[in-house]
Length: 279
View (cartoon, helix red, strand yellow):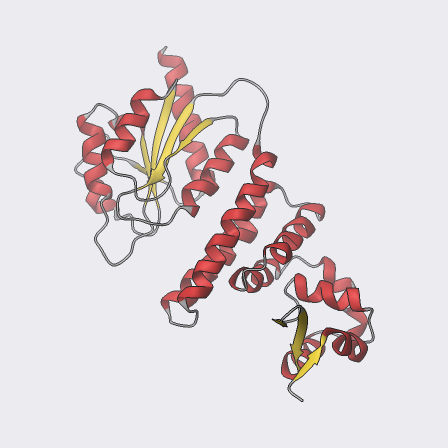
């Protein structure tokens, strides 16, 4: 027999059914659904028992070292409930919402992207993971709210031709946590939309553009050129693996390249302080 029911797997592990269920929903024990029932492949159960001392399995439920990898497994399965279980586990263990982005969602989605690009994950798994993590970000959103008057407005978005919406959505949450009002234009944003949003923004501090890249050349230099022509050159910061700094050197001032959300926050806060001094 290649598969065991979850109850049979729990019996072999010597744990309660709900403990085995938690192993599955938090990504520690690989399992699949057949109708309404969970099934565990005998090889996966063997790998689970050999990877950990059975006496330590319950204690291992609180370990966060492999949380991002466990989340990856639930994301590609489209398991929102199991994915949220892992998020809540990390929050209750001391992670901040910012940590959830940096140490959990980000690494898990990087794994999705790398496995998809190498052909080790099919397009269905990639779409399931993306759709699931978007819903997780939506559920996390209220935890990033901060009371008080906004510190100014930041316009962000993905450049034209880039269909990845997650990077700007995750950065938007972090910026809101730091007290900024955010206009997130999302994926595939044409230069004209950045300009229009910047004009409408109340107390504009910065304009951020991200480019993850793909098969087509990035449109980032064209967007930067448009913003410079409209008088917004001093407000620009950029980020993402498709950013080529040499392409931006012709602009004065040159857009600031940020490698992390922390870099972006530091630039925006410095820009806000400079604007306050100038006024």
